[in-house]
Length: 166
Image (cartoon, rainbow, N blue to C red):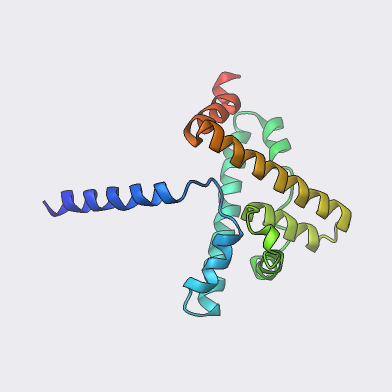
């Protein structure tokens, strides 16, 4: 009986969460919210570092998974280096990036690329172009989600990029 109530409670909570949060990416709002939710700066740093390490681990996992299917595609998709900086170096750069309110809706993964570009001392013109292009595609994606619905958009993307179809 307790197990059934537990599952019902979890279902209700997750249903409400999904209704409120219709996003694909963690963005600057989520990143800045960590500072408000954490009890102190050390805890905020640990949460951000854990997130970044998870992103890097997940990226490596999917690189290796796709590499077993199509090596050239995998290499082209994951060819960009995003681990030039350590999390200790990356976190302040991402924090600084999100101080600009116009960058708030940029996904954190894009901010990781941008932080690494700054670390590698890439030209400011190239970084600015990357930021503009990122804002363009995220805006386009949000509009597509609103027009087509997220489930249809994700289904179409999955069918388009499925390894099984090739």
